[in-house]
Image 1 (cartoon, rainbow over the protein chains, first blue to last red):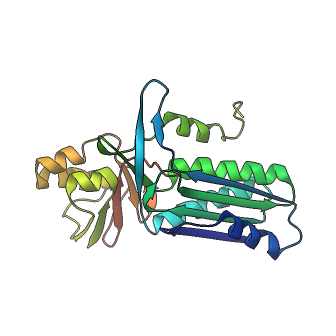
Image 2 (image 1 turned 180 degrees about the vertical axis):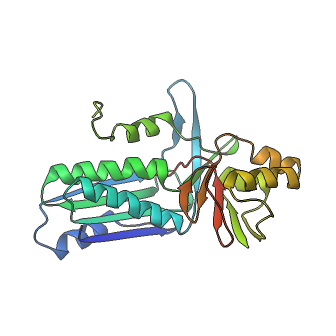
Length: 162
Length: 84
């Protein structure tokens, strides 16, 4: 891997700015895959859900950066990737605001797609961030999801799920 | 001295984000520290740290309850993560 940017910040980010910064530095990039997560107003299933007003994001400074770096290093071992940028926002975030951005460049699309997806799956299950959801009824800490844990298991070597 | 940090729902239940304390005599593992805190601090701590879903990090790396701890370590207790 050539470069890694990790930023944990309160302020919003510009997808356009970050993509341009990645693309303009080198000419060997053939693929740029990105993921952007944002605050959804509905949480839960079709039958049982709540309307979210805002989220509060807390993290463990120091460990967060270290954990993200470990995830990216694991991706770098598996795929041929060039540059990685991870931005995660913290603090109070209202619906439709951006929370997280992951961008991966590589020579070819398959590596960029796979590494970007792998990094997001592991970010959700091992990077020390916690969400508190604020609804009209009050606020509560969000529970970890089984589906997120299963997503990580599907990346295990030899797994038939992917 | 050790530093102990608490995050998210656990921080709220205990009313404590972080503290520095002498490593109690005879305590040499995360599990030992956890039991010590639950016994010494009363019901709020017993309840706050009771959940089987309490995760732990030693020096900012995820660790097992059986992990060894020593003077100078930073130990953190937190619930399952929910970022992204």
